[in-house]
Length: 131
Ligand SMILES: [Zn+2]
Image: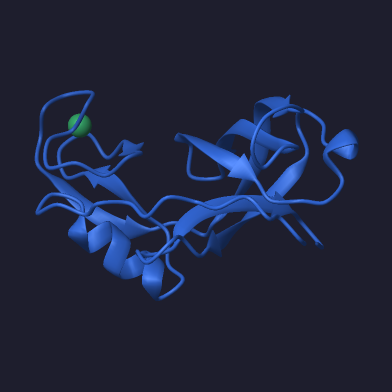
């Protein structure tokens, strides 16, 4: 993959530092509610469904494309933004890292790939399985 697009460094804060620390180790963390059991993304201290307390859990990092939009103009184009539905259930707004944007399709299987940023922690993107 030869994506020349520069990815700005995220600015971790006290609430999401753990997420980016895990990302640096190649782990994608999601939240899971201690009360109702529902997984969610992004991880947060309070469950978005029932306001219960939550636990950080590691996602398997696999899912499928729910929707996508390929940008064909501007800096770094082409690149593809997508919602990926993780196998655990939550949807993640992300980028699809590929050299073949035209072959991407809704329902396609993808897996997480951590992408370097400009001087910050890596961010999770997704690539077609097998790429
Ligand atoms: Zn809950």
